[in-house]
Image (cartoon, rainbow, N blue to C red; front, top):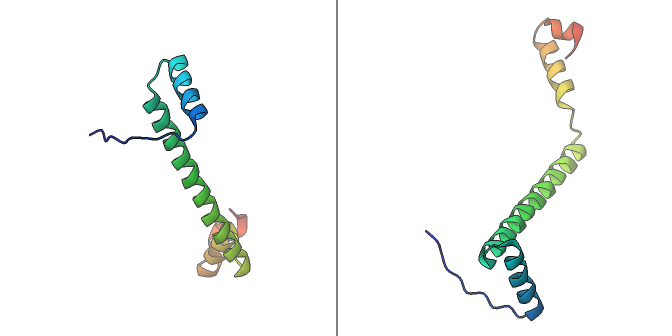
Length: 89
């Protein structure tokens, strides 16, 4: 169900630019604003994800992390005489 929200533009130039762009595109200004907010939220989510990944990578390096391929190959070789030990991944 659509929700309503009133917006106050303190920047008249921004308001005019939005209205002109809406006319130029043949779209409603509210659709352009909604698209911009969606894009901004997605970018923020990506930024947060990258920050989390960077923190995890730093912790991994600090704690002496091992590459996954090397870890699993060594684990398999310790557990049995798998052909992966001879031929690698």
